[in-house]
Length: 121
Image 1 (cartoon, rainbow, N blue to C red):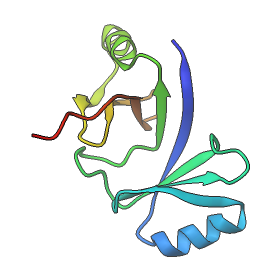
Image 2 (image 1 turned 90 degrees about the horizontal axis):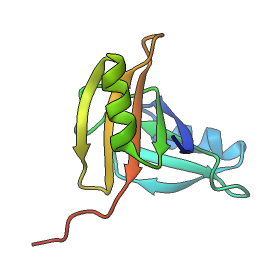
Image 3 (image 1 turned 180 degrees about the vertical axis):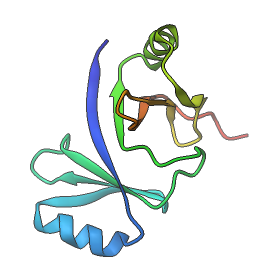
């Protein structure tokens, strides 16, 4: 299984203050959907963190996101292990295929792969 990146998700109801705070550490806004904002290092864009007020389609805000090469294979492996799936495998309109799983410590992990969003009608 190939991991592409790991992004901590910070629950935040103060996005402007958080952006300013993390800006001092060298992070800049690279994505903003209103309910989730991703900040990345200006010098190393693979170093990221996300600020989330909520998750628009899932029941909880995950503690971290892990982007993998093949989300379907990882999903099947987790189900085979009997892991608790918190949010089912879903194709989201913003271009990711993802599911949430609870780790042995109780942390909810968003496991995802990017894909092309469906074509507009």
